[in-house]
Length: 387
Image (tube, rainbow, N blue to C red):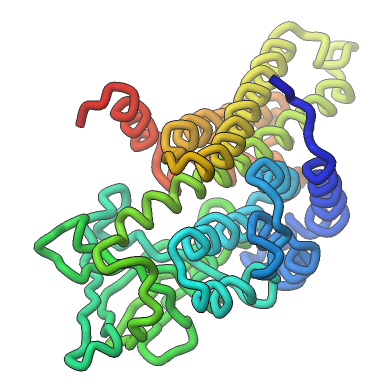
């Protein structure tokens, strides 16, 4: 067992850390307050190769491995979770699905501009009435009489980057009677007629990551934009989420690390009763628990990333490792952010410091791309073989 990072992994980790500290951290609070999409910093992230880390170079990406991707997301999330959300969706939910299931033509048309940072991708699975129950979707795709295109009608909700996206990987029912086996995946151009963006959602956290509802009104998608076979959409969605959960786990590790490091500094500097508060046993207990959970979450996340690479060779699913990493890391982020607020006291509750932002940002990691309850169900069902 070798825990040493490769030269390429160390390189992207260092590059992401420098970019996050110099370009993202100074503006994170401002973007959080305004809720404005961080166009400039995301453009720079694309120029550095962060928008397509695992995408092969021939499709505009950096051509690195899943561990490198997880390391990059952690560094960006430690500066600002909202930026890491945008980067994660581009990499995991959008590019990964097309690389796994797309044709060569689809990869050239839809991956190259997004992986190179010239365009933004998004992912449309959730609907107003179907979150965790993804098979219960109402968006319909009806094949035209001449077989040249599908006509989409329906609504998707909580679409990360939806207000600014250029392309979307989305899912619709082509055979409602078949339920999950009647779902088909498509790649859409977001600038075509019938693609209607709703208002940007006012969110508790990750506020600079623009989110909205998308409505389809007789949107025509060419049959050549179907991703995978007809009825294969649910398998596409679940495979993509296996990958996406590693990104969310890495994001959660980054949030937890930021909360821990801020608390460590504060415990050394803040004095009470004539001593640094870090010398008090109750503060030491919190710091020790934060550190242990942080390192455990990081190891699970890197294990999931490493196993994703192995699964590419074996053809296995990475479901169990992705769910364990996502569950553990997200709950660690919430634990560390809560402890950080407590350690900072009144200052932790003030917007003068980023601690309250870590607290708000951490919560979403327990919800999107599969709630903690769903992760526990996935883990238990995978281990027991029972449904």
